[in-house]
Length: 242
Ligand SMILES: Nc1ncnc2c1ncn2[C@@H]1O[C@H](COP(=O)(O)OP(=O)(O)OP(=O)(O)O)[C@@H](O)[C@H]1O
Ligand SMILES: [Mg+2]
Image (cartoon, rainbow, N blue to C red; front, side, top):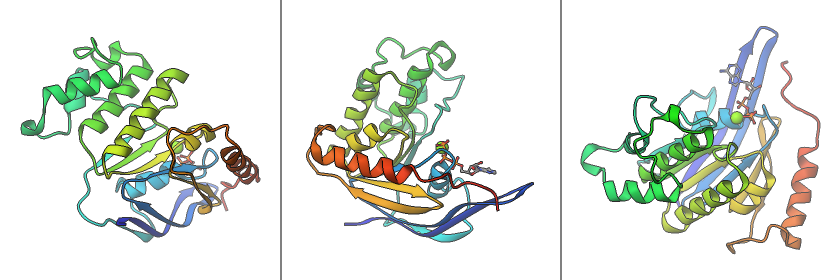
């Protein structure tokens, strides 16, 4: 199966106290149609990895190979909406004018629970509603590659669950490759085809999950995966400047 290949990716930042080596050689393939979830401690380099893969920053070494032309959508840790555009126009932002489809937009607005707020501007929305608008914008673009950086962290439990289900629907219905960063082990167990851990700048562990959906994350098999992840993440912190 075709996929996005990340080989030997390294990145460091210069700091007053020295050089901070964040990524030390990431090796990762993102298969088409799969959700790859990245877990790792705060500061381990998850957002940096996404920024490199998304072309927002240049790697030092290594390469990222795409199997063909990609339509890439990003959902960041914060919504990044256009403050002067309303919800509907934000969602359609990025689509070519002739590809905009009001019915599609209305369906997506309904899916993310924003019916009635089409004409609201971002400052009239709560943080979670802004984040749902950002998610809707990404989905409306019909991407072949979606990068998501803790996209649901600001949402309440039930809204988060329904957004996760929406993402799984996208996973079923498209061939999009999805690279998803989260701090939540539960979320990773719910969504992932594969979970990868980043520690000390490399992929330190990898877990393939059963294909069956919906999942019972309290079943014995997934509890065992959770134990393994917790013990791998418990190791001492790694991002000290050298
Ligand atoms: N532009 C930058 N300049 C200098 N240092 C940076 C820059 N961007 C990130 N870093 C450093 O790189 C490290 C990794 O940051 P990154 O944002 O990738 O972490 P993260 O894993 O996404 O953390 P979190 O889970 O808290 O979002 C941090 O120590 C951070 O201080
Ligand atoms: Mg981050």
